[in-house]
Length: 279
Ligand SMILES: [Zn+2]
Image (cartoon, rainbow, N blue to C red; front, side):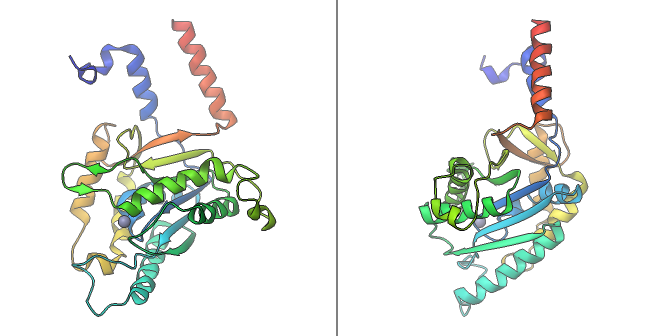
């Protein structure tokens, strides 16, 4: 029998592990969402951002490109890259205000040809040191294929890859990019990274109460949606992502804990002690 066919409840250790994974982490105080294109965050993590914003989290959205390549079927042949960039930046700002995201930063890299350069890593490191987020949210750079019909966009992979490199080791290490010290930007250690689109997404955020907000934010990307209503597809995705976690509507993440806070340390210790006591 394949390992994953075993019933979790039949293996106490695995049942405990699963219950822990299913416990939703509290909203952080500050978060930074880093993506390649306007609309990437609305399609993927906007429910989590809306929920956190409502819990008082101060969020900054970083858009590496301005989506100036558009998409062939939705972009009018007379459109220019510059005009499209302006339209899409405006749409991203509107989407962020629907979500309750306070700050939006555009890095103006060219859409469709993103490369994992040190310049990009420095730009992201600069923003992390400026805003000092507790949590960074980005996509999983290791996923090349989703099913048999979507090959992950190279910009998405690069954005995730460089965001992670900026988080670690660049943002927290004094002498990586010493020029940032001259700008007055001291090292900052990000505590957690929430990675979406991952095959190991075992942390679930229940977005049932903010599903409408997520859809409304996505609808701000009018130049991309035109008259297509994404509501049904977004509900299907949320249902799908929530299934494993026993939730009606969710976004799932692989969460990397780089620096535990004192409270978590305590609970980790308690967990270890409880485990020892029952061993
Ligand atoms: Zn995209």
